[in-house]
Image (cartoon, rainbow, N blue to C red):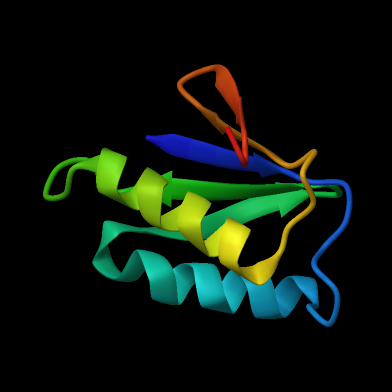
Length: 85
């Protein structure tokens, strides 16, 4: 399963490489960052051994904790959800 993070700016003091490394740590064995493009980070969630809902919650909590902007959206299953909704 894929999850996309749509963002306009990175949190203050963070580089994209930092965010990718930290997301991979948050996901551990539950998934990994697999690419992206300007304004989007693509994640592949493990769905055979782990419930992807837990990975979604962990990713959303991480994004809020590091201070992503309020207009950041998380897309999962063709549905976009605001980061702070």
